[in-house]
View 1 (cartoon, helix red, strand yellow):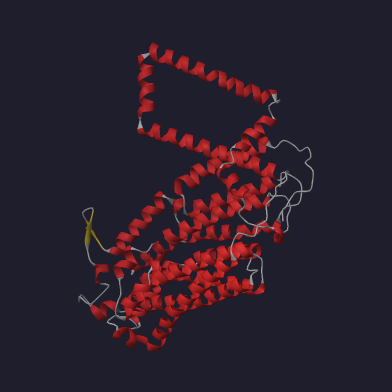
View 2 (view 1 turned 90 degrees about the vertical axis):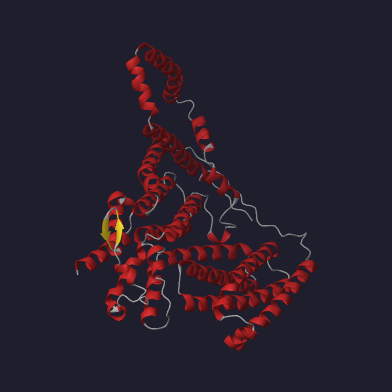
Length: 507
């Protein structure tokens, strides 16, 4: 199966000036927003400008567009919202890569020759990676088409001829006037000048990237592009594959039996082996997470290679997935047990999300195998589903939830363990409004200055630049200073935390 553009190329208006203007605007946005701040409001503004520029370029050429490509702008919007809302480094980093990756997919598919969604073989064909990583050849190809433009050629020729003469005259001037030579030398020897030179070179490369990508998007809409269908791996021995799956299933059955004993035996069975419940939980979760991930890889390798057309291989794959489901449940129970004992952390939250996502993907694979869904269709649906789900999770205040969960469980008497230092030192300012709800509890009246008080350090005095302040004052000044210096890199969380700390200080 392949997708092609059946229309013949026609003469079109030269869009070089428009593409050049867009490239300059994006380069300036990169310089003042993305390169300067990377995250926060700046990132959201930059990605919005980038998406608008892509749409404008795509509509410089007439013809039907792949409207379904706008699906990729949903993760872009959610990723930008994450940067606007939260300051969590983990959430921002994930949103950063998801957003830029989704924009890349949108730019490629929105400017591809018209093709129905159901006929798309793969979201990431070879052309996508080549075009994204190295679009510069399109700039040379475009310039070769306008070589007959005497004015453009004359300008380029003039610049080329002037460079050696500029260097000669500069050398003569510096030799003729020592004051000029010294001033010129001082300018180019300063650290600020060196830093400026690096930025100029960087921005020039980035500007050329945007310019090349713009020409590439226009050229892509008027040329035939063929994607080869996935070929069956005829060399894959079905008997060997079935044997391989049988061996894996036998081992998994034995392990699942042990998990059943753990479920029914409970804490007594674990303690009989000389282990605590918490030790048993933490000792196996990440190994089981790796097992689930490995099964996912094996299943998709088989799915891609055989389309699950062999009934025996498909059945054995479904059985393996079902047993992996039991293992995933066991892993989740271990993780929840550990959280119940020691509290919820950011790493434990994402570990739970990862194994849940793997479980959902494996479930979809099993359903696809039973329903005989093609690999191409299943891969597209699962990729989009995973992208959307992850993006949705990112607009949830994860670190605020972690703080609220741990504090409420402590004050409700569900646990005697509270790592307040983790809440303040390891979580971002997203968690501060939730942490400050401790003011609603009479924790100081209950514990006072006793060593059993996990919150006593919150009002302890410590020296910072010869000043005696408490941790609330310190965080207030830190956040305010961050906003003052990097306004565009801030988020709504910065202002929420600042407001809550101000309220607390005003009491």
